[in-house]
Length: 216
Image 1 (cartoon, helix red, strand yellow):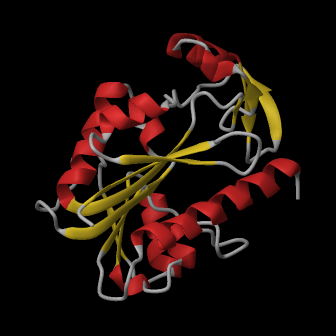
Image 2: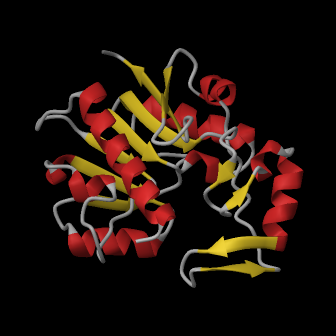
């Protein structure tokens, strides 16, 4: 495994450990996984669904029909739906806990991020939402240093020139960027007012920020 893959796996495992420690889930609790994916090829513990013990209590949503079909194939006990994180189709406080890993930075500008956060807080009693730290000096989507220290338009410009293709496992040029907008502590706090922001690190500083909130 590459150093990047080792660090990525360590980060994911630590997030899942923190989720268990902080949220203290139990078999009767209902869980909403926003932006859910599974890892059918490999380690079996990289994604939330892969590692969570009470899969029949998970409701998984993703905007991609392909991801939803994969979840249904490998975990038929999970209720999986195609849904938009900005307009979740459930009533207020329907779920005990909402979990979302590294999704909010992909939904658009700050207004759309705040809308996703509002939906998560609306449909769940508690939430655990992670996102990469904008001020970490290495950007893990593009796999380039310092680019998120630029204003967003500068980051987008760089991403349209060069980025890392994780499928081809090489850097490519002249491709479209998904326009991920990374958040700082203050930005994440504005999205989730009243929530605790946990700074998770496995290197020299926090790579990941986690909004934890809701009823205890």
